[in-house]
Image 1 (cartoon, rainbow, N blue to C red):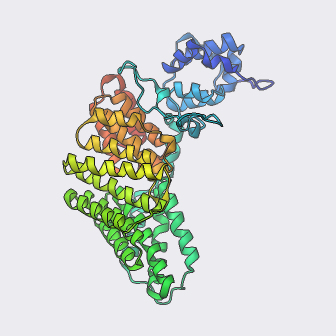
Image 2: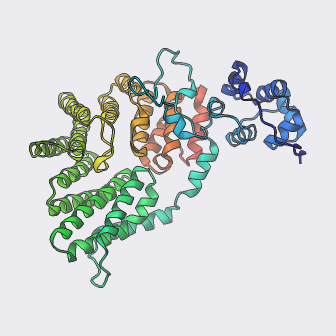
Image 3: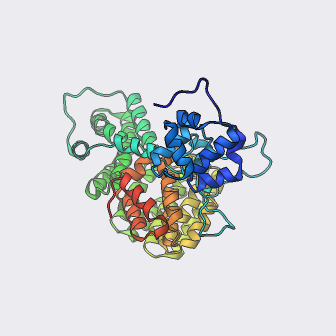
Length: 475
């Protein structure tokens, strides 16, 4: 057991900005890092060992090059022990401690120009050289170990799925207590908020009881409160369908989407009907019915637009999101012209709104339109255009983690299609920093990991394999 320091020691902040230190961090040469800490920070080998959990002999062996550090969890421990700032952690390939700072640029309290953007895809550098600091932040082993440890077992997942299936199909129990509408409204809002935070297992566990309560409310209430109960039911079933689509449970997803549409119609709210058209469009696309999906989204958008003389932010957001759904469906159908037209109309709606908000839980706005341009270019086989559009996204302006993660995953797919496996992997891992369950639980993301692993060049094959193994993904 190495002796403890008599008093805490802090490595000078200036040391982490030295070019030779940054070079050592980028190559993960811990021996060089320790030598620089000793030379310019004044720490003895014993002091370094005390901070990092090593004996003096182990520190000496690492500094001399006789032993190498390769495990991610050890890099994490060393970074923590030496109190590395986020710039140094990211150079070492670890997630920054302040993830928000990594995504949201520091802004002048009195800005004079347009808001800064986070450059997902740097310009003007050698494409064979990856600068990890440009990629929002990577996930360290400690983060993913924690995430994997918290996931449900297969038996627990099956039980949760069965409970949701039962809630979607059974009749409400006659002797159940009638729920209070304000409580139900708060519960639906919480479910939507939790979904947009990408805590999918958490929201899946709360949905069965919520759906049962809403069905009882719709069956027993009357008048205006019954219409409100139907609107809430439409929202809850929308969330359920979204979760099931991510899990690729097509049958239940269709059922939940259908329940959402019927509840929206019963609510007699044009805005709710238009909002629920979004999820049925998504379900149609998931089933490969892209032409029908384009028609449903376009028609719903036209009906909503015709009914609006002075659209509110809610109206513009639902209208714009319907146009985006239609554009994605058209692109997947190979219809470039329709996709371009609907995208341009959505862009106009985003300009009219003027910012990226989350009205009606849509996360709609100008940057959301750019995210869909990335996805659509990728669907049409133009990875270069997808990456150019990704360059324009201000990810800090996107209001919810689910949209941020989706933008990063589409960018990762574009890099993979472009043959830039290193960047595809780093952007994928950045998505995991903000939305771990997008990585650990989604079959589509696991397929992306397998695709990167299967075609990775020798230079990153080991890193790709270790990352896949940390997720339990096999080739």
